[in-house]
Each structure stands twice: as structure tokens, then as C-alpha cells.
Amino acid sequence: MEISKMGNLKAPGPLYEMAQHQFLKAAKLMDLDPNIGNFLLWPQKSLTVHFPVVMDDGRVEIFEGYRVQHNTARGPAKGGIRYHPETNLDEVSSLAFWMTWKCAVVNLPYGGGKGGVRVDPSKLSEKELEKLSRRFFSEIQMMVGPTKDIPAPDVNTNAKIMAWYMDTFSMNVGQTTLGVVTGKPLDLGGSEGRPEATGRGVAITASEACNVSGIDISKATVAIQGFGNVGSFSAKILSEEYGAKIVAVSDVSGGLYNPEGFDIDDLIAYRDQNGGIIKGYPKGTPITNEELLTMNVDILVPAALENAITEKIANDVKAKIIVEGANGPTTEEAEKILIEKDILVVPDILANAGGVTVSYFEWVQDLQSHFWEIEDIRRKLTKIMKRSFGEVFATKQKYNTDMRTAAYIVAIGRVAEAVKKRGYFPM
Ligand SMILES: NC(=O)C1=CN([C@@H]2O[C@H](COP(=O)(O)OP(=O)(O)OC[C@H]3O[C@@H](n4cnc5c(N)ncnc54)[C@H](O)[C@@H]3O)[C@@H](O)[C@H]2O)C=CC1
Ligand SMILES: O=C(O)CCC(=O)C(=O)O
Image 1 (spheres, helix red, strand yellow):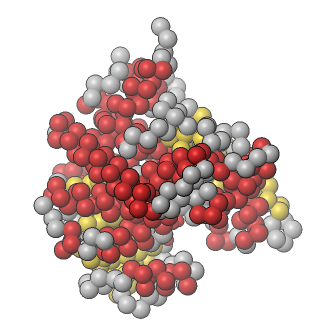
Image 2 (cartoon, protein in one colour):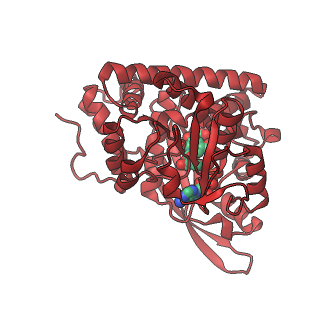
Image 3 (cartoon, rainbow, N blue to C red):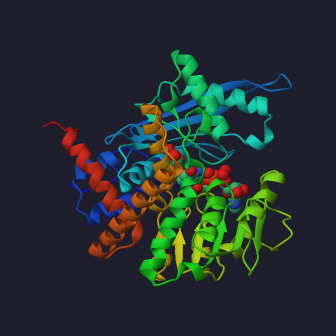
């Protein structure tokens, strides 16, 4: 029997199908047991909710939201919640699928989950945002819990929203439950180092990728797409701690180029005073997102949304290394071109795993009510990211394949072992 998209099961959309193709490539190479492969291709649980929010002008608006658990063989589901006007079940299911592999690549005792609400939060008042967040969390309460499924921030969500989620869950169950979400404020069960964690993981894996490619990171040039949590912390840590020069940055408002390298603290301060966008920053030449992605730099970090590097862009990519800060930034067609061009791609499920790793530290601290110092967090995170990069790179060499497929092989091996040992298929 072959692993296939069996019978009348249907992927929730094209993004999920692309993710399944990534999985199938690795499953074939590692000769995965087809029963396990067929099981792992599908999300275990998906919930779609519609819920009302009374807006400031008295109108009642109905919102659609999702929580998907792809697989929980290795532990509770883990993964962020995104607010975006275009999010949908296909996107959230794909993100949940990737979370399973991400947690397994870095060997955390978690499965994969993800959530989302179709909303443009920039159009909501603070009061509307809070009402929407609290109601959504109550609607998905049946899925979540500190030993079941632990959400966290993602695109357009943050520590403030995590605090509302935690409070809502706690009110509903009648006791303060810090461990139900991560990425919370520091004085409310949050962890040192969580805001910077994804960017730090990107910087660590970029440095490891430079090492295996013979590039001196302290002389490297970098272009970063997306200047939110992941993009800005990647930029800050790569420039301040690794000496790399960030010559191009962008966000939803467009991009900027500065061959001398940006002062990242100054750019972050400008963004924070300018409604969260970098447009109009005076110390750079305006460029488009397409120009940024095809810039002649050593390292390219896509840190915005999916499908940024298309076939057309891939043909023109000049970077030697791509470190995927975002989830799913490279399309299937683009991936083939990047492999042919021998560009080293550090895949999302490895490159951006620093965030969920420190979320795991936060959860452990919450459960123990004992909090660690930033030095401990950074040391443990660095160790995990370097070890994971090494395991994936060794697997790439062993199977003579690309880094993404190698990361899947490492991750699938771990999840398959859990499925077997739990006896999911009693004979
Ligand atoms: N926050 C986290 O800890 C983690 C986030 N990720 C992934 O990293 C990516 C970015 O997430 P965050 O930084 O948390 O989100 P964010 O909401 O803090 O920032 C997103 C950034 O992307 C920009 N952006 C949005 N649409 C764009 C477009 N069409 N072109 C260019 N830029 C655009 C926004 O302007 C903003 O600068 C997402 O793929 C997310 O799933 C992955 C792992 C962990
Ligand atoms: O911090 C977490 O638990 C999950 C972060 C996330 O959603 C991701 O890695 O894509």
C-alpha cells in the first residue's frame, strides 16, 4: 500500500495540499509505514465558530474563527492564533500541520495546533478587540487547556491578547490557569525572552547556515521581509549580536534599502511611533517587496506571510541562504527552483522554532510557578536550536536531500515512533 490522499478525504485547500506534498516527499524517502503516513496526513480535530460582537456603534457583527489540532501523539497541541482578514480553514489547518513537525524537529513534548479569526484588527477599537478576543476564546474553550491545547501569539496577536485569553479561560473554569496560553505579559506568567525568541532562533539558525556554507556572518548582508515580531527581532539580533548588516527591510506598507545598514533600534522606534509600519522612515530608499526578495544579499529572511517566494521571484533570488522566519513563505514551484539553484533554505519548521521553544519554557515555568532568568532561557534556546540544526543538516547529508525534506524526516520519525508506541492501530 502507498501513502496517498486516500478515498474521499479532501484537503481543506491548496495550501494544505502543498504542505501534504512536503510531507509525502519525506515519507517516501524514509520509507514510512503507509498506515502511519495516511494517518499523519490529516488534522485530527478542526473547529469553525461563528460568534457575535457588539461593535462600538451598537451594530452586532458576526466573526468566523478556527482552532485546528493536527496531531497530539507526542503531547498537547501547541500553536498560535492569528487575526487576519484573509485567514481561513485552509491556512489555519496548514499552520497546525506545520506546528506538529516544528515541535517534533526541536523535540518538544507537543503536538501541533493553530487558530485564527477572520478580522482586520487595525479596524477595531481597543474595546472591540477585547470583546472579540474574549468571546472567541470562550467559543474554542472546549478545545484548549493547559494539558490539551495551548495557544500563543501569531500574526496580529500579542501579549495583551494572550492575557485576555488567559483571564477568560480562568473565569470560565473558576481558577487562574496561567498555563493555558503562552506569550503572556511578563508579570502575568509570561517568560523572559519570549518576545525575542522567534527572531533569536532565526539568527541562530542563520549563523549555523553560514557556518556550513563558509560565509562569515559578521560580514554578511541581510534582507528581511516583514518587520513585526519575527522580522524586527531577527534584524536586531543578527545585527547587534552577529554583526550582520541589515540592508533591506519591508512590511505591508513597502520596503526600504540602505547599503550602509539600518540602525535597527531607531527603525523599531520609528515603527512604534508610526502606527506599526515603516513607511516614510527617512534613512532609506523606498523599494518594493519584490525588489527586497530578489536583492543581492547573502541572507534573505522572509518573515511576513505564506507564498511570498513564488516561482517568478525564485528565478530571480540572489541570496545564498534563505532562513524562513515566516511559516510557509515558499511555494512548491519556487522550492524546486531554489533547490536547482543550490540555495540553502533553512525551512520554517526549523528556522522559526525558537518561538515555540520558549513558549514551552513559559509553560513549564507556569506549571511549576518558578521562573527562570533570561540568561538561562537564551542558553537553553541556543542549545536546542544548534542541536536541531545539526540533526537536520546531518539528515540532509545522509539522504542527499534538501533541508526541508531533512527536517520532515527528523520530525516524522519522532511522531511515527509516538504513534507506534501508543498503539494507535491495535491489530
Ligand atoms: N510570533 C511568533 O512567535 C512566530 C511567528 N511565526 C510566523 O512569522 C510570520 C510573521 O509573524 P509575526 O512577526 O508574529 O507577525 P506580526 O503581526 O508581528 O508581523 C507581521 C509583519 O508582516 C508584515 N506583512 C504583512 N503582510 C505583508 C505583505 N503582504 N508583504 C510584506 N509584509 C507584510 C506586517 O506589516 C508586519 O510587519 C508569520 O508567518 C508567523 O506565522 C512563526 C513562528 C513564531
Ligand atoms: O509559541 C507558540 O506556541 C507557537 C508559535 C507559532 O504559532 C508558530 O511557531 O508558528
